Image 1 (cartoon, rainbow, N blue to C red):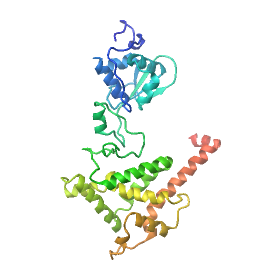
Image 2: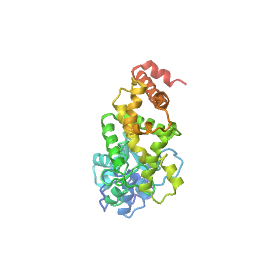
Image 3: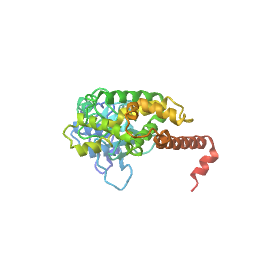
Image 4: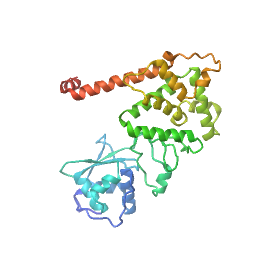
Length: 328
């Protein structure tokens, strides 16, 4: 792995390394390069320099440090050098490493390193142990919130949470995944809208407090050692504890036409049944069934999203609008 004295490392001929390291399917690109370097008793920094001219993804003047969660982008020349060193075809590397970016182009080999970023989802720790400790990229499916193999909650939680003890959460995650499969363009945005209402916009309403008691009970199951005050706060901020109710709202909305929202009272009644709130209204709580007041935040979110979607569609189909949008 040595280069001629005085020359740049990436100008040395690339040949297969002594130890053949295969990528794990779905492995992070930084993790794979570290494993290749470690397996061949080579500092990761040296391996990067052998692949091409190394740049920080966002700050060219910064020193590059490789982490297992780093994302690597290579141009064609650097990709071919990685294929030569690893003994694995470039096409296979791109398929196996979802975070290995490829920038087509000729010239000298260039490699860009993106530092680890805070992400909404993470990979399943148990899946990583099965993969021999390789760092895996989170599922590309934005709403794959639970590992289907191990039942682990994939939105960052410390320590990781297993949802087997709360089967209604696992069922809701499966429903959300199926809905996303059929309505991928809108489901992620709809999930954000609904969760915003459940987390903030409906807070303080009596029926919302009734739902929050369910969330706190689920927190009690998975985190029995958490103090009551902390559990109360967690129940109102963590995705998993409110997922069954969020999916119930999404399912009702998915069965209606979003662009022409149905009558407020009809939709509110549908939501009430889906959230199992009918008994709440009939127990004399003093909390009025006000369809307009209950639905207002949700309707505002959906109306704003519809307006934004129409604006994007009109811009995409009108070249003059695209030009105007780019003007300062």
